[in-house]
Length: 104
Image (cartoon, rainbow, N blue to C red; front, side):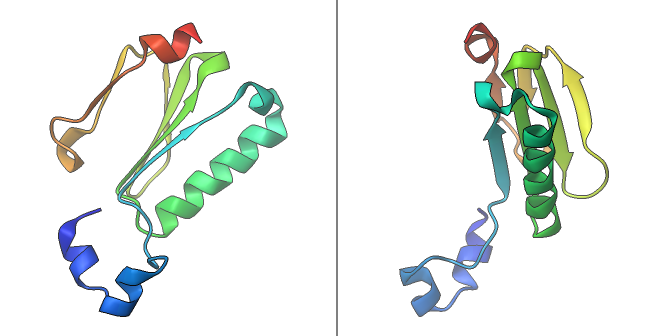
């Protein structure tokens, strides 16, 4: 999370569970999430993060070798079998290599 967001909290809020949504969210679907209802639940969770201020979300779906990229606003975009994810302008320099995730 950006430091400015953290500093905007009261000292009491910082000592407990902070009422903030992370700036970056990464969800990893498990092998038990192959059911369409389970993926729908994960997508609903990603949409909630997006609605609550996440700047970027990645939903990794290993059994499909796919990633859904959830930007701060707008529709999710599906990427099939990408090798690398990059944080783009929101998270410059952030990269996630996916070969080990796809390998299982």
